[in-house]
Image (cartoon, rainbow, N blue to C red; front, side, top):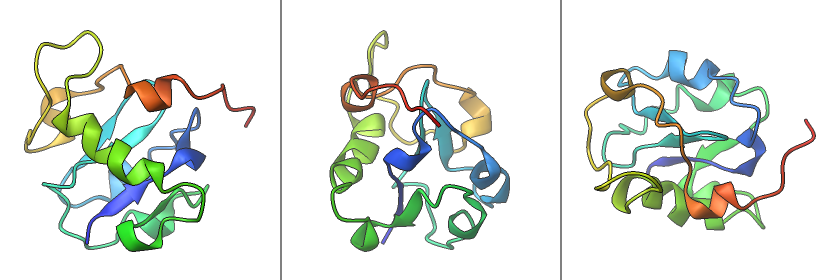
Length: 114
């Protein structure tokens, strides 16, 4: 069961989770962070360090935020705006750096006031 970052991360991106992740599977979009479900080892190190409690196991995503489960997968499996191919399995966020774009779902969400 992989972990998912929901909408509470939107426009905040504290990045404490990236530091805590032992396998470097958390990637940076433009407005939100995403966990690569193929790289996540389900250790849970990211969850307690998130200051906005945006991270949860896939089965425990808060009600009303379930769309982030599929959207998180889409970040890696679908072609993102301005890219030629899906990100897929990269083998570590440091290898590629900030992606700089988000999924259409996240890009279309209203700006967070946090």
